Image (cartoon, rainbow, N blue to C red; front, side):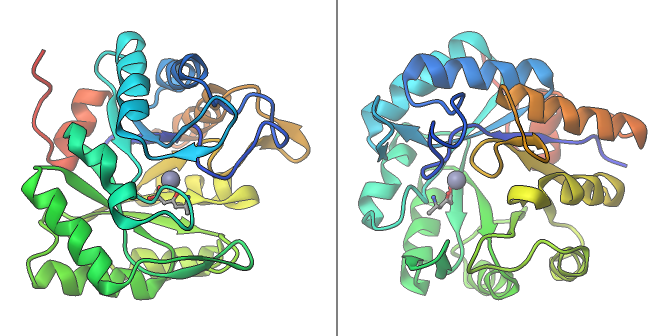
Length: 276
Ligand code: KMH
Ligand code: ZN
Protein backbone atom coordinates (compact mmCIF):
# COMPACT_ATOMS: atom_id res chain seq x y z
CA UNK A 1 0.00 0.00 0.00
CA UNK A 2 1.17 3.54 -0.75
CA UNK A 3 2.51 5.60 2.10
CA UNK A 4 -0.03 7.88 3.76
CA UNK A 5 -0.17 11.55 2.82
CA UNK A 6 -1.46 13.62 5.73
CA UNK A 7 -2.82 17.04 4.85
CA UNK A 8 -3.29 19.65 7.54
CA UNK A 9 -6.02 22.22 6.88
CA UNK A 10 -4.69 24.53 9.55
CA UNK A 11 -6.98 27.54 9.40
CA UNK A 12 -10.01 27.49 7.09
CA UNK A 13 -12.14 30.55 6.44
CA UNK A 14 -15.00 30.02 8.86
CA UNK A 15 -13.60 28.59 12.10
CA UNK A 16 -12.81 31.17 14.80
CA UNK A 17 -10.75 31.54 17.95
CA UNK A 18 -14.12 31.44 19.76
CA UNK A 19 -14.31 27.80 18.62
CA UNK A 20 -10.71 27.04 19.59
CA UNK A 21 -8.21 29.69 20.74
CA UNK A 22 -5.42 27.97 18.79
CA UNK A 23 -7.05 28.76 15.41
CA UNK A 24 -4.41 30.84 13.56
CA UNK A 25 -5.11 34.29 12.09
CA UNK A 26 -1.77 36.12 12.01
CA UNK A 27 1.22 35.24 9.83
CA UNK A 28 3.14 34.04 12.89
CA UNK A 29 0.24 31.92 14.11
CA UNK A 30 -0.14 30.30 10.69
CA UNK A 31 3.57 29.44 10.62
CA UNK A 32 3.34 28.04 14.17
CA UNK A 33 0.36 25.84 13.27
CA UNK A 34 1.89 24.66 9.99
CA UNK A 35 5.10 23.71 11.80
CA UNK A 36 3.22 21.80 14.50
CA UNK A 37 1.45 19.78 11.78
CA UNK A 38 4.63 19.27 9.74
CA UNK A 39 6.64 18.14 12.77
CA UNK A 40 3.88 15.65 13.57
CA UNK A 41 3.92 14.14 10.04
CA UNK A 42 1.89 16.32 7.68
CA UNK A 43 3.44 16.58 4.21
CA UNK A 44 0.84 18.96 2.81
CA UNK A 45 -0.67 22.17 4.19
CA UNK A 46 -4.07 23.23 2.82
CA UNK A 47 -3.98 26.96 3.30
CA UNK A 48 -6.52 29.72 3.82
CA UNK A 49 -5.35 33.08 5.13
CA UNK A 50 -6.95 35.69 7.36
CA UNK A 51 -6.47 39.29 8.32
CA UNK A 52 -5.12 39.69 11.85
CA UNK A 53 -8.70 40.05 13.15
CA UNK A 54 -9.72 36.72 11.61
CA UNK A 55 -11.50 38.07 8.50
CA UNK A 56 -10.93 35.65 5.61
CA UNK A 57 -9.05 37.09 2.63
CA UNK A 58 -7.70 35.78 -0.67
CA UNK A 59 -5.19 38.63 -0.95
CA UNK A 60 -2.16 37.58 -2.97
CA UNK A 61 0.11 39.65 -0.73
CA UNK A 62 -1.23 38.01 2.43
CA UNK A 63 -0.80 34.54 0.91
CA UNK A 64 2.78 35.38 -0.03
CA UNK A 65 3.57 36.54 3.48
CA UNK A 66 2.10 33.42 5.05
CA UNK A 67 3.66 31.05 2.50
CA UNK A 68 7.09 32.63 3.04
CA UNK A 69 6.70 32.29 6.80
CA UNK A 70 5.66 28.63 6.49
CA UNK A 71 8.52 27.91 4.07
CA UNK A 72 10.99 29.32 6.60
CA UNK A 73 10.01 26.69 9.17
CA UNK A 74 8.80 23.80 6.95
CA UNK A 75 11.20 24.04 4.00
CA UNK A 76 9.93 21.12 1.93
CA UNK A 77 6.23 20.92 2.82
CA UNK A 78 3.70 21.07 -0.05
CA UNK A 79 1.60 24.21 0.29
CA UNK A 80 -1.83 24.09 -1.29
CA UNK A 81 -3.67 27.43 -1.24
CA UNK A 82 -7.45 27.41 -1.26
CA UNK A 83 -9.26 28.85 -4.26
CA UNK A 84 -12.52 28.30 -2.42
CA UNK A 85 -11.86 31.18 -0.09
CA UNK A 86 -15.03 32.10 1.74
CA UNK A 87 -18.67 32.13 0.64
CA UNK A 88 -19.54 35.25 -1.38
CA UNK A 89 -16.10 36.01 -2.83
CA UNK A 90 -15.80 36.60 -6.59
CA UNK A 91 -14.00 34.16 -8.87
CA UNK A 92 -11.05 36.44 -9.55
CA UNK A 93 -10.74 37.28 -5.87
CA UNK A 94 -10.61 33.57 -5.08
CA UNK A 95 -8.01 32.86 -7.77
CA UNK A 96 -5.45 35.39 -6.49
CA UNK A 97 -3.14 32.87 -4.75
CA UNK A 98 -2.73 30.95 -8.02
CA UNK A 99 -0.75 33.97 -9.32
CA UNK A 100 1.98 32.87 -6.89
CA UNK A 101 2.26 29.63 -8.91
CA UNK A 102 1.94 27.13 -6.06
CA UNK A 103 2.45 23.43 -6.82
CA UNK A 104 -1.19 22.71 -5.96
CA UNK A 105 -4.42 24.54 -5.24
CA UNK A 106 -7.97 23.44 -4.55
CA UNK A 107 -10.59 23.34 -7.29
CA UNK A 108 -14.15 23.17 -5.97
CA UNK A 109 -16.35 21.05 -8.21
CA UNK A 110 -19.90 22.18 -7.54
CA UNK A 111 -22.38 24.42 -5.76
CA UNK A 112 -23.87 23.50 -2.39
CA UNK A 113 -25.73 24.88 0.59
CA UNK A 114 -22.91 25.55 3.00
CA UNK A 115 -23.55 25.13 6.70
CA UNK A 116 -27.14 26.37 6.60
CA UNK A 117 -28.31 29.36 4.57
CA UNK A 118 -25.04 30.19 2.80
CA UNK A 119 -24.52 29.05 -0.78
CA UNK A 120 -21.01 28.13 -1.89
CA UNK A 121 -21.31 28.84 -5.60
CA UNK A 122 -19.28 26.97 -8.20
CA UNK A 123 -21.16 26.84 -11.50
CA UNK A 124 -19.90 24.77 -14.40
CA UNK A 125 -18.41 27.86 -16.05
CA UNK A 126 -16.66 28.78 -12.80
CA UNK A 127 -15.11 25.33 -12.54
CA UNK A 128 -13.99 25.50 -16.19
CA UNK A 129 -12.50 28.95 -15.59
CA UNK A 130 -10.59 27.79 -12.51
CA UNK A 131 -9.47 24.58 -14.25
CA UNK A 132 -8.18 26.52 -17.24
CA UNK A 133 -6.24 28.99 -15.06
CA UNK A 134 -4.63 26.08 -13.21
CA UNK A 135 -3.59 24.37 -16.45
CA UNK A 136 -2.08 27.65 -17.72
CA UNK A 137 -0.23 28.18 -14.45
CA UNK A 138 1.02 24.57 -14.11
CA UNK A 139 -0.85 24.01 -10.84
CA UNK A 140 -2.15 20.57 -9.85
CA UNK A 141 -5.75 20.86 -8.65
CA UNK A 142 -7.04 19.02 -5.63
CA UNK A 143 -10.63 18.36 -6.66
CA UNK A 144 -12.83 19.32 -3.72
CA UNK A 145 -15.98 17.23 -3.88
CA UNK A 146 -18.69 17.71 -1.28
CA UNK A 147 -21.08 15.24 -2.93
CA UNK A 148 -21.10 12.46 -5.52
CA UNK A 149 -22.45 14.77 -8.24
CA UNK A 150 -19.25 16.81 -7.95
CA UNK A 151 -17.16 13.75 -8.80
CA UNK A 152 -19.26 13.36 -11.95
CA UNK A 153 -18.75 17.04 -12.79
CA UNK A 154 -14.97 16.73 -12.32
CA UNK A 155 -14.82 13.66 -14.55
CA UNK A 156 -16.91 15.36 -17.24
CA UNK A 157 -14.69 18.46 -17.23
CA UNK A 158 -11.61 16.25 -17.25
CA UNK A 159 -12.91 14.59 -20.43
CA UNK A 160 -13.49 18.04 -21.94
CA UNK A 161 -9.91 19.08 -21.17
CA UNK A 162 -10.43 21.51 -18.29
CA UNK A 163 -8.82 19.28 -15.67
CA UNK A 164 -5.60 17.38 -16.31
CA UNK A 165 -4.77 13.86 -15.03
CA UNK A 166 -3.51 12.43 -12.73
CA UNK A 167 -6.70 13.25 -10.84
CA UNK A 168 -6.58 13.80 -7.10
CA UNK A 169 -9.82 14.18 -5.15
CA UNK A 170 -10.62 15.45 -1.69
CA UNK A 171 -13.88 13.98 -0.36
CA UNK A 172 -15.18 16.65 2.01
CA UNK A 173 -17.79 14.75 4.00
CA UNK A 174 -20.17 15.92 6.69
CA UNK A 175 -20.70 19.57 5.70
CA UNK A 176 -24.29 20.62 6.42
CA UNK A 177 -25.51 20.80 2.80
CA UNK A 178 -23.13 18.19 1.37
CA UNK A 179 -22.86 14.42 1.56
CA UNK A 180 -22.95 12.87 5.04
CA UNK A 181 -19.87 11.40 6.70
CA UNK A 182 -21.07 7.84 7.11
CA UNK A 183 -19.03 4.81 6.12
CA UNK A 184 -21.73 3.91 3.60
CA UNK A 185 -21.28 7.27 1.86
CA UNK A 186 -17.50 7.02 2.02
CA UNK A 187 -17.65 3.68 0.20
CA UNK A 188 -19.96 5.27 -2.40
CA UNK A 189 -17.58 8.22 -2.99
CA UNK A 190 -14.50 6.07 -3.02
CA UNK A 191 -16.06 3.67 -5.51
CA UNK A 192 -17.03 6.54 -7.83
CA UNK A 193 -13.57 7.74 -8.81
CA UNK A 194 -11.37 6.15 -11.50
CA UNK A 195 -9.03 3.33 -10.43
CA UNK A 196 -5.94 5.39 -11.19
CA UNK A 197 -7.06 8.50 -9.26
CA UNK A 198 -5.85 9.28 -5.77
CA UNK A 199 -7.97 10.66 -2.97
CA UNK A 200 -7.84 12.14 0.47
CA UNK A 201 -10.78 12.38 2.85
CA UNK A 202 -11.69 15.35 5.03
CA UNK A 203 -14.33 14.34 7.58
CA UNK A 204 -16.03 17.34 9.15
CA UNK A 205 -16.46 17.50 12.93
CA UNK A 206 -17.08 14.14 14.53
CA UNK A 207 -16.51 12.39 11.19
CA UNK A 208 -12.84 13.41 11.03
CA UNK A 209 -11.20 10.43 12.71
CA UNK A 210 -13.60 7.62 11.69
CA UNK A 211 -13.14 8.61 8.04
CA UNK A 212 -9.38 8.97 8.55
CA UNK A 213 -9.31 5.38 9.82
CA UNK A 214 -11.38 4.21 6.83
CA UNK A 215 -9.02 5.89 4.34
CA UNK A 216 -5.95 4.55 6.12
CA UNK A 217 -7.31 1.00 5.80
CA UNK A 218 -8.45 1.55 2.20
CA UNK A 219 -5.16 2.97 0.93
CA UNK A 220 -6.42 6.54 0.58
CA UNK A 221 -5.02 9.66 2.19
CA UNK A 222 -6.20 11.83 5.06
CA UNK A 223 -6.88 15.50 5.78
CA UNK A 224 -7.34 16.82 9.30
CA UNK A 225 -7.06 20.28 10.82
CA UNK A 226 -8.94 23.13 12.43
CA UNK A 227 -10.70 23.97 9.16
CA UNK A 228 -12.61 20.70 9.52
CA UNK A 229 -12.62 19.93 13.24
CA UNK A 230 -11.25 21.57 16.40
CA UNK A 231 -11.61 18.59 18.78
CA UNK A 232 -9.06 15.92 19.58
CA UNK A 233 -11.81 13.76 21.07
CA UNK A 234 -15.37 14.36 22.28
CA UNK A 235 -15.37 17.63 24.26
CA UNK A 236 -11.56 17.96 24.26
CA UNK A 237 -10.21 20.84 22.18
CA UNK A 238 -7.00 20.12 20.25
CA UNK A 239 -4.15 22.34 21.44
CA UNK A 240 -2.73 22.54 17.92
CA UNK A 241 -3.13 21.17 14.42
CA UNK A 242 -0.12 19.04 15.28
CA UNK A 243 -2.17 17.17 17.90
CA UNK A 244 -4.73 16.24 15.23
CA UNK A 245 -1.97 15.02 12.91
CA UNK A 246 -0.36 13.03 15.75
CA UNK A 247 -3.64 11.19 16.27
CA UNK A 248 -3.75 10.22 12.58
CA UNK A 249 -0.15 9.00 12.80
CA UNK A 250 -1.08 6.85 15.82
CA UNK A 251 -4.01 5.29 13.94
CA UNK A 252 -1.83 4.71 10.87
CA UNK A 253 0.83 3.06 13.04
CA UNK A 254 -1.78 0.69 14.44
CA UNK A 255 -2.63 -0.43 10.91
CA UNK A 256 1.00 -0.58 9.74
CA UNK A 257 0.63 2.27 7.23
CA UNK A 258 3.83 4.31 6.95
CA UNK A 259 3.65 8.11 6.64
CA UNK A 260 4.79 9.86 3.43
CA UNK A 261 7.45 12.54 3.61
CA UNK A 262 6.87 15.63 1.45
CA UNK A 263 9.16 14.16 -1.24
CA UNK A 264 7.20 10.89 -1.19
CA UNK A 265 3.91 12.79 -1.28
CA UNK A 266 5.09 14.67 -4.38
CA UNK A 267 5.87 11.37 -6.06
CA UNK A 268 2.47 9.87 -5.17
CA UNK A 269 0.67 12.99 -6.43
CA UNK A 270 2.71 13.27 -9.62
CA UNK A 271 4.25 16.62 -8.63
CA UNK A 272 7.74 17.60 -9.71
CA UNK A 273 10.44 17.11 -7.07
CA UNK A 274 11.26 20.24 -5.11
CA UNK A 275 14.13 22.22 -6.60
CA UNK A 276 16.05 23.98 -3.86
N1 KMH B 1 -14.47 27.95 2.81
C1 KMH B 1 -15.34 27.20 1.97
C2 KMH B 1 -16.49 28.05 1.51
C3 KMH B 1 -11.58 25.17 -0.51
O1 KMH B 1 -10.71 25.46 0.32
O2 KMH B 1 -11.33 25.07 -1.70
C4 KMH B 1 -14.64 26.63 0.78
C5 KMH B 1 -13.45 25.81 1.05
C6 KMH B 1 -13.00 24.96 -0.07
O3 KMH B 1 -12.84 25.83 2.10
ZN1 ZN C 1 -10.45 24.99 2.45
